[in-house]
Image (cartoon, rainbow, N blue to C red; front, side, top):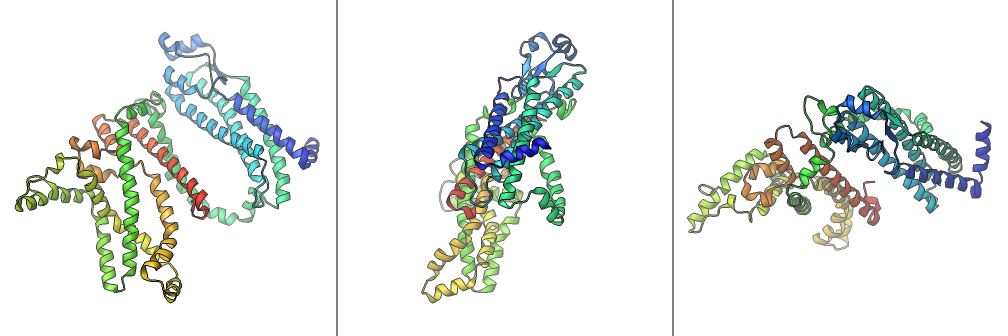
Length: 496
């Protein structure tokens, strides 16, 4: 306690104390990054001869193994040694390392910038980043020791040992966390800010009400994410998920070697058209419906536009086939009746981008229109009345009142839609096109391709998981970039 008191007195000095504390902890952050680089081995193999013999590792496999491994290369060891049971643990360590690096770099960057927050938070955000970084670094080192113990338990002998670097990093992270915590405590007093514990004591009822929601998302959203591991193994029921052979990125390699450019092009372009054209038409019809004054006509029109949303894609397939079939389709019968030449839709690619877009709009416009119509109905009617007094016509009222008022709704729906830009509407494409290989060039998307290879290669769970993970990461990046651009242009409309 005496040493902590002396430390507090020194850190209280703004010019020298806190600045020195930040520089020291920043230097520790840099050291933690350097010591976790790929060329620094954290875990070593010991008793290699007995270990290889007991694990059934052949000389050919042993030639690909090294004596020491960093967090980066642990997955390579799992793949080359065939010890699939260690794969998930090694992957989790790599994810913790990535998170630790992010906050370590963020903390260093905030120290270099040396800017106090303009909202009265002082340097609290800097210290929060530093504490998070040190906690993750400590978790990484403890997890590395845990990996050694777990790996030895799986191997049934002492085949792994931790490096002294792990202990040094743990001590440095703990010491830096203590210093940052003391600096943060002083900063909270200056900024009149209380911490999480005080917030819990003050609003414990509200936090208690959040527990069921947290449990719901934990069970239904976060625990299923463990299934991502399917994408990195060659799954079989004999070994189970955790012990199946770890194959690294081979499932992703298979996907990207399979005309991935065409699949990404089709998926993204269709979604861009669906999102862009769909929102424009939904807004257009929402404004039209809002301008109708005859109540029965307004309700009837809205109902008729909304009904296609409830038509199943199986029924849509029947309807499309009845319209487009070459021999007996309604469209070709009409063309023949007028003396024209029938069109072979199912063997001609040029029509299908327009047809699929048309089918999508037919089903979705009514549903999307309701959202914008609800927003329009919520606009204060006094604004329209005032504009009428000022002499604004209906088009000016739409331009200067309606469109600006529905802008936030449009931006939020746009960001949500962009999150699934790599996820195609599987039912629409599969039901309308099916397995017609002649149309794959313009109608094949990532979802339909994964479905075909999964059906053709039973139990290809890894390929489906790899495709889903790629889609999710792609969508996440797009959402983050879009939100960043919106925050720069219109900060009030950004999601976060």
